[in-house]
Length: 145
Image 1: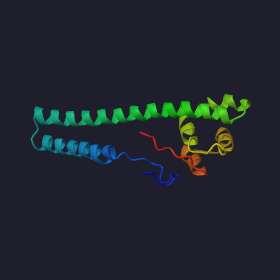
Image 2: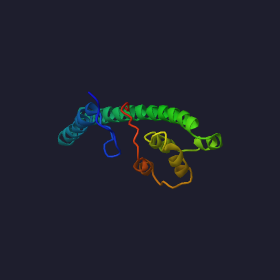
Image 3: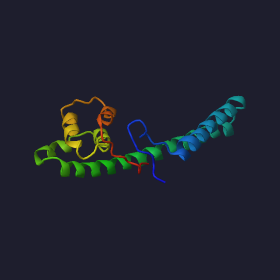
Image 4: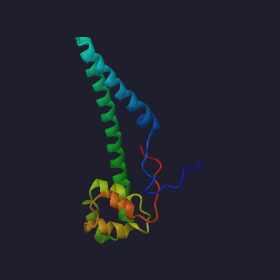
């Protein structure tokens, strides 16, 4: 089955098992453990709250690490892409780009990259979201974590 055409409006990715199953269960677990500790304070119930918080924090940290690795890979891929699409005199500015700007530029088609790159370098965009909104010919990325 072919995924729907990706655009700025629908490019945000939700991973159902994480966003709609694991996170709600972890949050409910923290609430239930806290309610138990408030109603019947003891070493066991307080430890249950600490454990629930620890599991939630552990899952959040693991997710953060996955996204950090993903962004590093995107940065590497896009730096190579920019070097192939931009003239040599622009190559020095590639490494000066903020990671979030490089991540946003990945959605631009090859024909749009040079103009958007120069707009980013000259500071025409305040936020990476503005870069994505400026993309006319969206280059989809369906392999995100």
